[in-house]
Length: 209
Image (cartoon, rainbow, N blue to C red; front, side, top):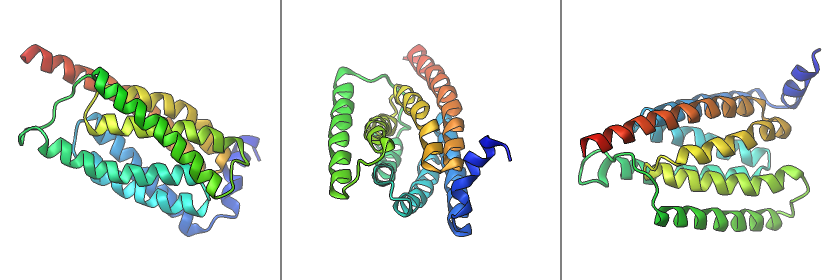
């Protein structure tokens, strides 16, 4: 068989049918969530919650504690973002805006605190025995900061997603979650499209102000 297909399929030879189906469902809802995000559709949050809850289970099974932490955070931030998009602007739909210096400081703080937290989680479970564990600490920090910016509808969230997606694509293939690796390829494409779509929305808002 082709070495590429072997690399992709090998981890699934020992996986249960149930876990494979769960991963596929999680991927589908994850892609739907990002698609809704670029459309500024509030369905980004319920679809995202379904995806992240399923990934919490998968990451626990695969002992990917950094990723597990990411998905717990995503679930909580999706609830927060759902509220922000719907109610934070006096009942009006929250508009796309650029991040202020204060926003970047908060995002930076989230990034640093997240990395420290993930390191503590890995140390608690006596991990850091794989190179992917070290990279996890960085991508988790980026994703946490990006999710906070998205929940507040800051356009720069897409830039952080793009950076983290580029790192995550090969990372998930190495981890043995091939379908998730494919998901992040699609995420990368959607993130680029999302940035362009939100930029048009931001420009339109500026013109009407």
